[in-house]
Image (cartoon, rainbow, N blue to C red; front, side, top):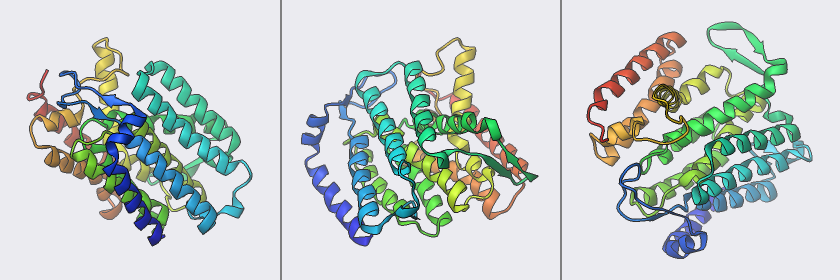
Length: 338
């Protein structure tokens, strides 16, 4: 696996020295509009494409050379399981890539997302969330007939909250590195997660230099890989015992999604259309790019740190973080640019 990591570094080095050619081939650029997009020059949206190429290499290396994927022996996968995972991952990637290029209607994008997840669940029952354990409730909750609806809901919330959360350079890479580091330790150092972290670090360096953007293709791709990983760690490996952990892992982007959806709806605006009221916009208006990213990362880590390492009660952690979040929004909101 060390050879794979070294190979990915060389492969991506070659990609980046030929970034202009890659950008010309993909032909998707993000142009500044002085409203939502404040970068000064058009920037290639090739982060998702780079992620997809790397994932393709990682996936087939694990399948054909290591004979495992997500720490599971390839032999235990039924015939359609690997196929369903590939459909889910690459369908989400191409959905995001199409949105980057043609600006897909948000409602159509939502409907297509639901259909993609439904197809994957139909082919692979291991993607279904059938039960939950909560730290504050001693009985396991069996979802029964609600399993399909709940699974779709969870995947949509995760992917869309992280897509909403992507707004400044480095932000998505920072939080995905945090997510996969969490999974790395939960899974006793699953090398798949390690390669994801290496890849994210490589792409983040270029993103911070404004040489490329991840775009919806990149965020959707990493979000759906994260969704699959969390479900498999919960369903198969049993490394995630309480659903509370996943709740706190995603609390910051989830709260921001909820706040923006409510505020836009109350103001009679489309909740699926962007604005500059995200928490990262509030921070970047006050601080440098690097400090904003560090502050957002620390806020993301805080609830899970309080819950798992300090072993605090679920409700104490949730309401304490909710107060911190609301205070941060109100404190920095006065400085947001219109």
